[in-house]
Amino acid sequence: MGRIMTLAIGDKIAQMRESGLGCALIAKEFGISKGSVDWYCLTNGIDPPKPRTLKPVPSSAIAYERGAGKVRRFTSIEDEYLLVLEQQGLSYTKIARQLGRPRSSVIGRLATLARHDARMGL
Image 1 (cartoon, rainbow, N blue to C red):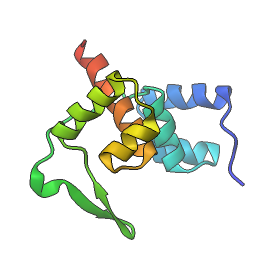
Image 2 (image 1 turned 120 degrees about the horizontal axis):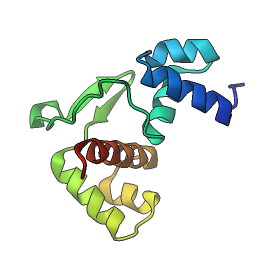
Image 3 (image 1 turned 60 degrees about the vertical axis):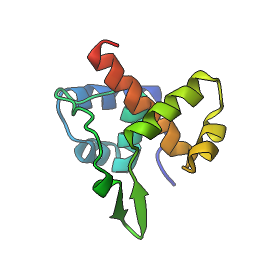
Image 4 (image 1 turned 135 degrees about the vertical axis):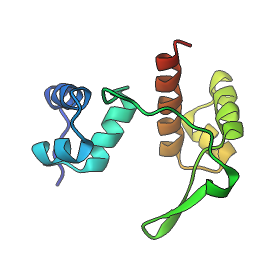
């Protein structure tokens, strides 16, 4: 059974991440998975002190192996389409179906794009 994410834990995660600690160390501190910390930070706009910039994905690097499956990176064309669908008011589930991707990938990518735009002052 996993640990329940409380507001107090979330606040501490944000403080630790923004001070420069890595997600693996934060996860160990709270007894939760690194993926939980990654997802929490992503969906709540919590960046490390020196956030990475979004770089265009070369077509040769669109898919890569992770564990037993392949992961498809979002291309700039998909990003544009994703934003258009969101502006049209489609649900995450409908957007995911349009793009042929998991709903969680759509949520995560929209959060990433929003954080990037906020850093760029858009």
